[in-house]
Image 1 (cartoon, rainbow, N blue to C red):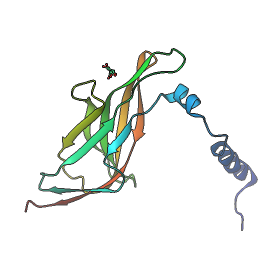
Image 2 (image 1 turned 45 degrees about the horizontal axis):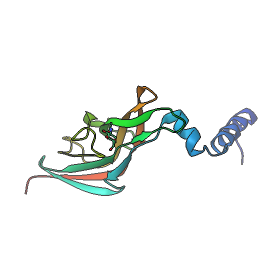
Image 3 (image 1 turned 180 degrees about the vertical axis):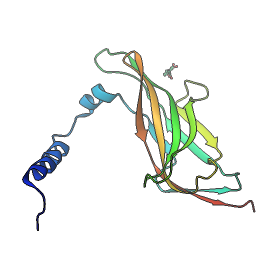
Image 4 (image 1 turned 90 degrees about the vertical axis):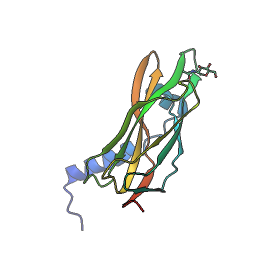
Length: 156
Ligand SMILES: *[C@@H]1O[C@H](CO)[C@@H](O)[C@H](O)[C@H]1NC(C)=O
């Protein structure tokens, strides 16, 4: 049975039409948002353990450092913000860090360890928000968000 009013149905169909529009080519996408760095670690579904605030949340992020096609100058990852986001939206996000750079700052990989935030126990999207030098300014975008779980417990 269809309870949708025709106008709503038309809107829904239009939305689907928008989603299924021709795929954006790599070059077009790059022109809009820039190249993106990528997460080396953790892969999706990684399980972390945090016993009494002694846990180790390890991250490795492959930076961008390249020359843009068509003489448009360099693009390079400046740093990343990290936070844990509840995929259900029920819990507020847990910030981990802002503007984390590589060491040394031009190293290919940002590699760091954190104690998971207090109270972050469960499953989360580990969000990597990249800040990138691109076309002469710093842009910011959500680059990746692997799914992780954190099991909490007392010190053993
Ligand atoms: C990009 O890579 C080049 C060549 O390895 C290096 O000299 C330069 O410092 C790097 N730049 C950044 C911003 O990482």
